[in-house]
Length: 158
Image (cartoon, rainbow, N blue to C red):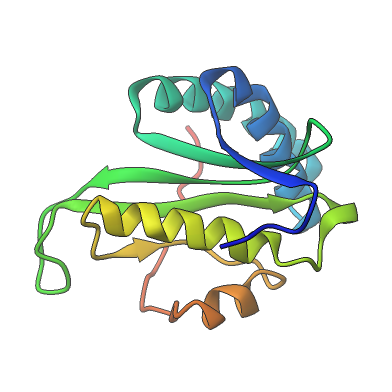
């Protein structure tokens, strides 16, 4: 897993929470989410990120060029009951995969994914999930992800 020349990979720290949130907001905006909903989710999402980075339930990785972060991704570590699909309770939910527009097309998202998947293997995770944007779907399919039968119900806030 080699990055293009001039790029470096590092683990995200608690001090990176605002940066990760900025990437997250840009990701949702790029995917066409309502800008007001992105703004409304920013503060609670940042508070969640602070807590999850601090307690280790979220791990992030970042790619830098000349000291500036140009890409990132993360994984939420979830404990769920074993099932016929996975006998281990630890699951991984990959999120916040983002590459800045000027750095796209170099395989950075694929590199980030491979690093995260290697960490999943080290931790004994048998099941990894994510939600794919239209732009990201080809990368995930090439890595072996498949569509599932997941369903969703969105409840209106009271």
